[in-house]
Amino acid sequence: MRARRISPLDRDSYQRAARLILSHHLVTAQYPDRAALPLLRRWATELREDLLELFGYRLEVTETTARLFTVADRLDPGGGARTVTDRPFDRRRYAYLALALAALGRAGGQITLSELAEQVASEAGRVPGVELATERATDRDAFVDAVAWLAARGAIALADGDAGGWVSDPDRGEALYDIDRPVVAALFRPPRALQHLRSVRGLLATGDRSGGDRNADTTEVARRVRRALVQRPVVYAEDLDDDARLQLALPRTTAGIELLTGLVAERRAEGVALVDSSGRMSDLRFPGVGTVPQVALLLAGEICARVSDPESVPVRLPRPAEAELEAGLDAAIPAAGVFASLAGDTGAGPADTTPAQQPAPAHPLVEDSWLAETAAKLVDEFGRTFAAQWQADTAGLLEAAVTVLQQQRLVARVPGGVLALPALARFRGVVVTVRERDPRLAPAGEDSNEAEMS
Image (cartoon, rainbow, N blue to C red; front, side):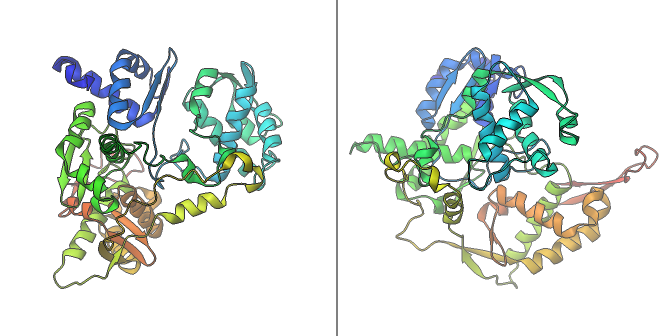
């Protein structure tokens, strides 16, 4: 690894660059900030070699962009694009984003928002189930969410006008954008043309490429485990096959990641998690500030107390299979657009790596009814410290908190409740202190109480 040859004085800078590209995958002159691209350009050579050696990732750095081409081994239900208000993209927004990218790739140096909408609407009409009707406010909102996602990454830059005015009244409002063609080209370069796929598994890593070379096969298994460690909050041994479990148990598998990123591997019998004390590599920091993260932490502590109660004998169930996500995505592929002569096989990678020779481990079930009662109790006890929007929406608050725990792989949703996964025990024994603030110092309209949790 090139990281071993970097002096201790420069190592912090190198690790910041590694965390940056592993977090964002695309870095431009303005995204995520103006200091990011110069930092990556400084360490481009070293990062290119280390990322390839550890993960099999390919890094391309130009004068205006840095793009990390990652490898996906499994589908991630928690990943994906999000709006500026942190809402996940739905299918319509993804469709508009893909069609907008195609239109920008054919455009010149500038384009107006209405022209871009017209081109997207024209192309959308040729895809079954996709439509952009600019007279509908919901379609305009979804389209501008896709445009804002592109603008945030520097693919387009507002030169004149206001997108909000167009959303309010497309006949009167307008916006003009400059197009950054290198960023547009770097944004979307899938490993295979989507028209040649019959299944989303064609975008996942292919099977054994070693040609029977045991050493090469071991290297690829180690890369697969390292990819999981940086892509997931926690890697459970039960999710892996025998070879991958062995690699997960070896200290050398995580040693390279720790040296590259500055993260620390936390090992338990059930698996490994990389702890990011800086909070600069995680897309969702937990524990975090705000009502939802704090309620999620409280709920985690309550669930731990429930499943560890000697008087309670919870039902234990295996985690649900991940095939449902794949099936749902495959069902959305427009079969009429697939080029049958080029599709060939599904392009599927290895089948689910959960060991087939052993029964799937069972985890404690926490019922929906108990979760609802506990959420109501938390609102009654600490609701005065919560944001106003959640104080009267206990069901919505519970759903948001459980979503946070699921994204962190601390629980798994199942019909009737959630399964408590092993990493949840890390947050048992939560202590809550309600700090009273001087009401004379609180801004008008705000509560003078706030909760601190540890």
